[in-house]
Image (tube, rainbow over all chains, first blue to last red; front, side):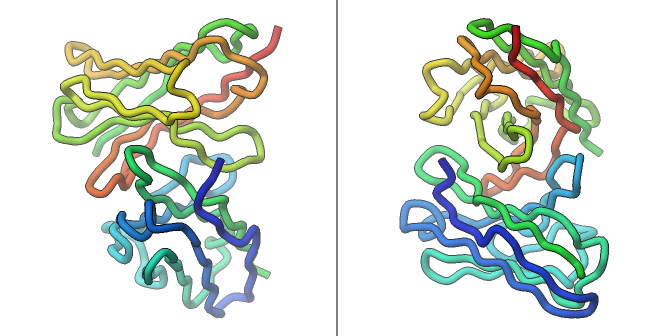
Length: 108
Length: 118
């Protein structure tokens, strides 16, 4: 049912930069703020980026978000072992929140 | 620091009703935030179920709308989820959460696994 498409996986070695894409449409990403979540195994998701590029207090500046048209991206620079997790984008679509398909980031 | 805690039976029979409550502490449910339910089937992605405001206004995911009711109890500082006519496809970890601006979910409960089985 996800209307936001993400690559299923991404990987990198410690210190590298990894980028995750999130593709949507004019009814969601094209007209709504994009939020990003990190989910470590067995835990609840954690808000990583809100309103396209804003970082909540406590989120390292290694994480950055951007948006252009109907696509958004999350970049992780200086990859660390603790970044090994699932990442989800999300946006409003009409009157419901839609999540991306999720991307598993593996730190090699 | 806002904290949310889901509670309810972990096992529901097929065709029965799934009922969960989310207790909110460290903050008031009458704040300007909306309050959500999100679920995640084992090994799968996140699905938004719906939301409620402190005044009782609701929005539901159209795919679940006919079976879902979300309500709020201001006196107990909690909100609840009812999902009717459940099947095995409703087996999932259910999270309650708080929405901030732009629909960003800034606080999450730890989640509770609900299994639908006879």
